[in-house]
Length: 105
Image 1 (cartoon, rainbow, N blue to C red):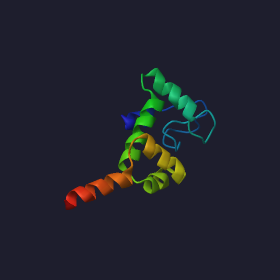
Image 2 (image 1 turned 90 degrees about the horizontal axis):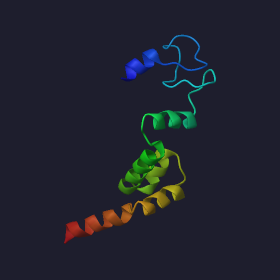
Image 3 (image 1 turned 135 degrees about the vertical axis):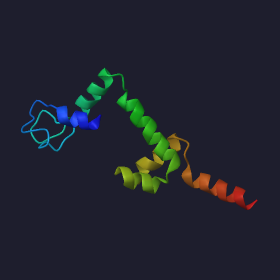
Image 4 (image 1 turned 180 degrees about the vertical axis):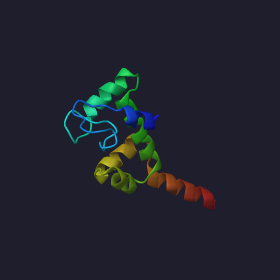
């Protein structure tokens, strides 16, 4: 499906052949990808909810990874990653502590 999309992609300012454009979703300005707002609208038109899906993915990651790794991986401040962990009830350090204690008993 991705190969078909690349072969048939189009954008308002697309210049050259599909093989010349570096973006899977070319935007309205030459040399730039589509904006996140426009991509979100396109996804909504086909029934996807990008905000809800993004939040679900972030909360899942926050519940499974230490805040330091999450922050570095996503390029967010450590305090933001800690807040996501608390909101998702993914206190990673406490979870590791409980597993370690349970394994020793």
